[in-house]
Length: 174
Image: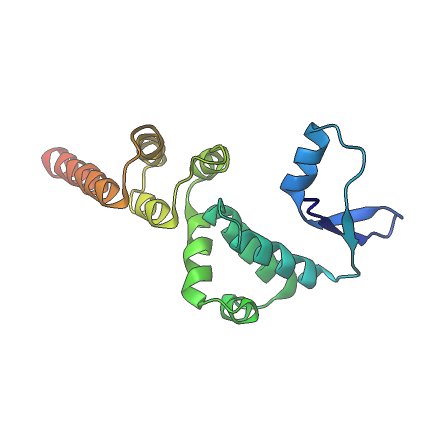
């Protein structure tokens, strides 16, 4: 089955990809010289809307990447997260939770983005990581999630342990 990508004409006479980046990359890796494209005139907001919709419906979606798209949409259009959620038919909490992940430190966000497809970390796990302020501990916990396959409940217990140990250090030496 030939699943198309979607592009829009750009000012320089070329085409800009709207969605289908993974399919395009796979086609390049496979050595294909041609792929099926849907060409559509679309403004920047419509491009963002379609990118978000495609990502929300992917099985292996990354909540951090979704948060980045929602944030970019807000920056480019001035719309609120509530308006963005409404235009997508999503609950505002869906949008807010993902945007909240952008508060994770850069090294942690980069590590999350580098996780191979098929090995994912879910939203609940990432929100648990936010409870720990130390980026080094966040990275350590992220490694534990990936290496040991910690469930959300197991991660909650680990976060509580880490935070409890930190409090004891502050009390003892504070």
